[in-house]
Structure formats: structure tokens, C-alpha cells
Image 1: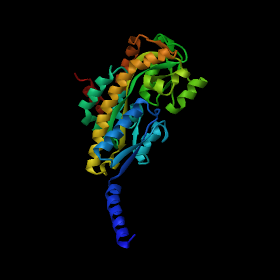
Image 2: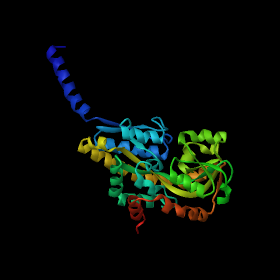
Image 3: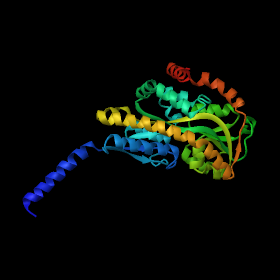
Image 4: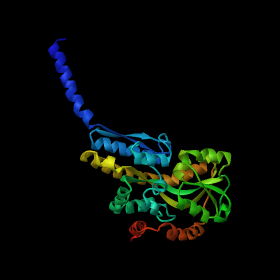
Length: 321
């Protein structure tokens, strides 16, 4: 092969490689749910859309199952820049973005669709709250309606008396389950299966998707349809890191995050009843306690937990007719 031909080949390769290398963006995103659980599927959809919108110049590397740390570690990683993005429960993120505590309140949104509509209508307000805490909000996904899984049946609120119920590491959740008569026990999601198996806790509040994805029915075969919380799962990245990106990548991230979240919320809602049917077929005992006593016990939390002007303003926006 002639020297001229070798130079030509090298030049073509360099020209081809240069622009691609300059335009490639791969973002590591972590979450603690199982691979292919509804949260993970939402991120897969976001990756697909991001690649489409950037012609393959940007993508997501998804790390499920707590591979990059528990939820607190993921959020702190985003703050420090050691993790590009995180999808966590709102209940952990609201420890950092205090306005988001609104989404931790029991019985606030009866349906996932209704919650999603309010989120989309008030996006600017939510984005500002995240920005003020150093985050860029990319999407608000759903972790489903939260119920109660236990090692023995719960037929009424009175059956909770003294039971050790795992909650997230969030003060609203702790106070809510204390108000319901339980002994709330905050712990990491990654530790829950073993804690149920060994009897460290008697049960845990959880969504149907998590009960299924982590096979909790193996160690907590009773599932009470309480519907106490409509859980969101925001996707965030460090605001300064987002601001440093080219405008086209910023736009693609925002569009893919929002569009994937809308798709994912609809997908989660479709899964609710089929999953309950699946649990019944697998031998789990399904109970339906009267929600009225739970609702009544939850009312004082709105005054005691939502104490800032920002929280009150967001609550007003989210509950406006």
C-alpha cells in the first residue's frame, strides 16, 4: 500500500473520529430499584429519546439496584459531581429540595395521571425550586401508589399498633406512620428484604411495582391496599454541570426527560391492577383497610410539615382547581 494511500486513510479516519468524539456525551445515572422495574423502564425510554434527539451524540448509562450507592449517596454524588444524574424517591430528594416536601404528603393526589398533569402545569415553579438547591430537574417519574406489605394481615388501622414498619429516611413518612399507630423504622431500601426476612421489621410501606420487582411477597406475604401516598421519582443532575453543556444537549435532555416521564407515568398506572391480580395468583393475601381513619390521622401533618412560604405556594399550585 502506498504512502499516499496510507495518509489518505489516516486523514479520513481522523476527520470521521474528530467530530464524533467532540460531540459524545455519556451520562451515568443511578437508582435503587430493580432492573426493568417501572423506574428503570422510564430511564430506558429517556435514553432512547435522548439518542434519537442527538443523533447518537448523547446517551445514558443506567445503573439500577443501588450499584452507585443508596439514594442518599446518589443525591450527594450528584451534588459533588461524582454521579451525573440520579433518580430517587422524592422523599429523599425533599431533604435537599425542601419545597418538594409537598409530594411527601399523604393522600394528596388520588391518581398518577392527576399528579402528572399538575406537575406539567407547574413545571417552572418546580424547576426553580430545584435550581435554588443546586439541581436541574429533568423529569418527574412515578414510583406508583404506596400501600403496605406485612408478615401478617392488616385489616384495619388498629392492626398497625406497635408493628415495626420500615419507612424511607424522611420525617414526613416517619410522622405519618407514627400517626397511624405503627413504630416507624427508617432504613435504606437495599436493606429491606433482609430486614423483613430476619424479622427486624414487621412490614414496610411500598408500591405494587416494588413489591413485585424485589419479590418482597416472598418475605411479606400480606399486602394491604392503603394507597397512602402517590410517590414521585424525580430525575436530577447538578445544575452547574447542566449549565456547562452545549445548548442542544441541554434541550435534548430536558425534552427526553419530560417526554419519558409522561410515558412512564402512564405505564405505571396501567400496571396497578394487573399486579394486584398477579399477587393474588401467587398466594399473597390482599386486604383493603378503610382509608378514612388513615386520612383523618394524616390531616395534622399538613400544618406541622409544610412550614415555609415555598412549600405553601407549591401546595396551593398543586391543589388549585
